[in-house]
Image 1 (cartoon, rainbow, N blue to C red):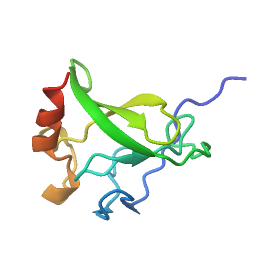
Image 2: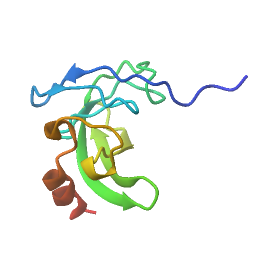
Image 3: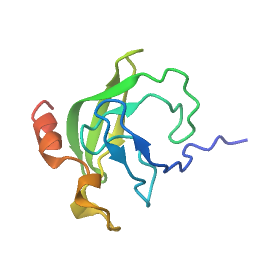
Image 4: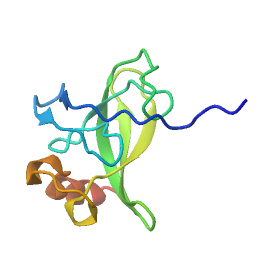
Length: 115
């Protein structure tokens, strides 16, 4: 039996790092704050919420990807695990959200310089 690699889980949340109220992204699962780009280490597979670590995933760099646009590379403050997530950019969006709900492009560019 094949294990599903992605579970859509697009609920809104309050960022544990900066307190920003994050709205659902609509077209996919959102797992990070658009203002500070932090996330929680709660998934084993995307959207499953099966990881008990619950540490803060901090963005450490951003890199370009030909298919995904910008990809945010994270490191968990608690366990040290690293991972990636696609950035949610306004110019790539097919839906309409308030501007503040799209990823902070200035911070993305700053973190790209670390790549």
